[in-house]
Amino acid sequence: MPEVTDTHFLDSAVQQASLLVRASTSAFYLCDPACERFELAATHGLQEVPWEEHLVRQAALSGQAVISTSHESPALIAVPS
Image (cartoon, rainbow, N blue to C red):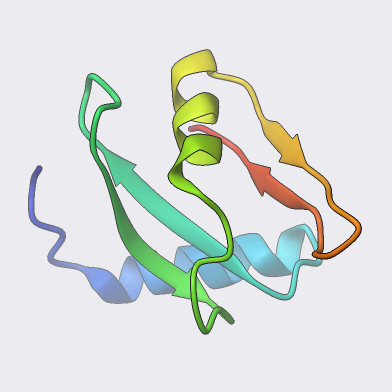
């Protein structure tokens, strides 16, 4: 997977995405072209990543947003780009 060198840009983009959707936390993943490997590239407001990689993988493979809801935790949304 290519090395990300401009982490300031990714951090800023993730923060702006959080503000746009009024989320308290967000994360940005990079994936290889086959969607086999994912790398957490930037986060905003997260102490730890609260979801499993399958949510990110499902969004990347389908090309559609995926929403996971639970009574124990806030809603999780994975959106491919």
